[in-house]
Every structure is written in structure tokens, then in C-alpha cells.
Image (cartoon, rainbow, N blue to C red; front, side, top):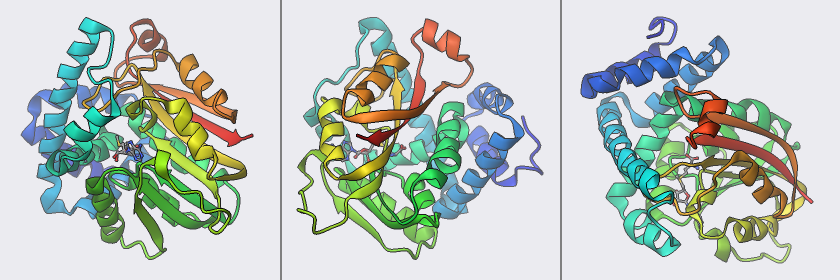
Length: 310
Ligand SMILES: C[S@@+](CC[C@H](N)C(=O)[O-])C[C@H]1O[C@@H](n2cnc3c(N)ncnc32)[C@H](O)[C@@H]1O
């Protein structure tokens, strides 16, 4: 599948997963064959971070959660193909079914954390965040992530020398607990403010606290009924010319996805009409397909958009 001596942390995760779910081997082979050396190196680095965060003994549990959630995604995919729509329509249903269910939320976040090494589109998105976005935000940035969940992206921000402060808001108490656990197990010493907070209800501090120079919304907009209002609400907490990094999947059914984006153009337009100037965008198709084919067949594409507050 890949040189296990060159990528030992990745090999440890993959070997455990294959022992639990041998039928997934072909998908994994495809996924790693799509990556060049640079992406394999960043994947290996991510795998090492996940092993340190999770602890070796807990990897089998993460792999079981990954398998369970992949099976659930197949059911959601079936619904999507039959109805041309996501199953859930309202945020309160997602809260009831997912965000308030601590056990499910934990499994869900474990699954997503592993997907950042196992899925090509997620691996590319995270590499983009670490290598393209974070180094280019201004020195002394106050950085906010909305919906940090497993905490891997927030962890990357804590390590950056151009980031002065790090804040996370999440509507789910289980997610906040996971983010906290992630940062503690990775030995983060930089102070991080984590708040149980729906992004729509965040109080305006009236200039008492610094506005954010950098905001991340990764895999969050598709969870909302009205992403345009969400982006406008978030922009009120941003400094002039502050930057936002958005990772939003199109045609991507999941147990808590509500807002269906059908094309990459629609994703970019959404951001551009919400008070932001687009700086760049990149589109990463799901494992095993080209961008052209993903567009043709309405398959999942991760749209990664960097924009600036106007
Ligand atoms: C799928 S997870 C994304 C985790 C991580 N950011 C990533 O990219 O993998 C979505 C997260 O957004 C949070 N979330 C959803 N709606 C939210 C809202 N209105 N305000 C704050 N957080 C929200 C969920 O609780 C969850 O932790």
C-alpha cells in the first residue's frame, strides 16, 4: 500500500484499521496511491499527532468508530441519491440527533479525526490549512475556530508563531470536551479559550475584547440552515481585512448535514455574497475520483476557500 518504514505512524493506524475492517483495504490503497511524497509526509505527521492525541491503546476504538460512521454515511448517501436532498432539514434536528448526544458525538469526532489521514480530500484540506493558510495570516493574529470538534485544526493554530491568541466556539459540549482533551494530550501550553457557543448568539463585546484576525469554519457551514447569515454573523467579530478559511463539502450527505451545496461555484458564491473578498479557492474531490468526474456525477468535493472581510 505504501512504504511502512517511511511512514511508521500511518502504518500503525492503517494496520489496526485493516485488522478491524479488511474490506476497506482497496479504498485505502486507492487513497494513498493518489498522494505525492509531500502529501504523504504531511499525512505521516498528522498520523503521529493523532497517535499522540489518542494514545496507542485507543486506536482500535477510533478505528471501530470510523467503520461505524462510514457505514452510516453509506446510508445517508443512499437517501441522497434517491431523494436528491439531505435527510435533515433543520438545525434543531441535528442538535437532537447529533450534537446533544455525547456518545454519538464522541464517535463522530473520532471518525472525522481519522478521516484527515485516510481520505484524500480531507488530507489535502488539512495540508492546505497548515501550509498555505496559517503561514499567511498576519503576525500577532487573534485566531478563532468555530466548531473545532476533534481539535486537530485548532492544535495547528496553537503551534504557529504568528498566532497570538486562540479561541474555539462550539455548540456541542461533547465537542468542546474533545477539543480540550486533544490540546491537553498534545501538551499545548499556549492559553486557549474554549466556549460553549452557538455562532449566531456570540455576544458583541463592544470593543472590549480583540476582534479576530483569522477565523476558521471547517465542515460547519453545511450544518446550518442559513450559512449566509452565519458568515455575516461571524464577520461582525472579525478585524478589518481579517481572513477566513472555509472548508465546506459539496454533495456530501452525513447524519447532521442540512445545507446542500450542489457545486463548487455555489460554495464560492456563497462566501462572496456574505461580505467577503475571495483570495483563493481549491477543490479536492473524494478519494478515487478526479475533479472532473466528481463534478459530472455530483460526488463529494471539499471546497477550501480563503477570503478576506471587506
Ligand atoms: C463536523 S464537525 C467539524 C469539526 C472540525 N472543524 C473539522 O473540520 O473536522 C462540526 C462542528 O461544528 C459544530 N457546530 C455546528 N453548528 C454550530 C453552530 N451553530 N455554532 C457553533 N458550532 C457549531 C458541531 O458541534 C461540531 O463540533
